[in-house]
Amino acid sequence: MKNNIKEEAKSQQHHQEFLFDNINYKILLIGIGVIVLGFILMSGGGSDNPNVFNEEVFSFRRIRLAPTTVLIGFGITIYSIFKKSK
Image 1: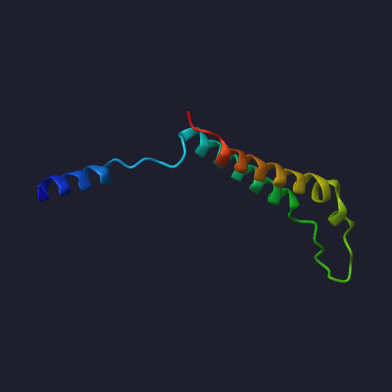
Image 2: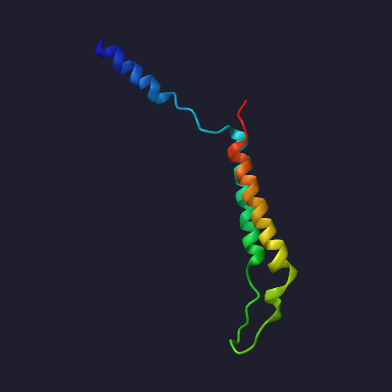
């Protein structure tokens, strides 16, 4: 009786399923990559001299493109979490 219980516990430990399918993890990594790309687009634009203002801070890339890219990346990661397994 004790041996059966031990064997069942061992077999349950070895048979472990992942929470998501393989495609979910791939979509999740793509979403994380898009988020990182958005933050890279957002970086830069500073000035070496603190007394001089650099207008590059207000460029289209930093004000519109980068935050939109980050939000799209978050949308992709949320989709990868809610995607149903077959």
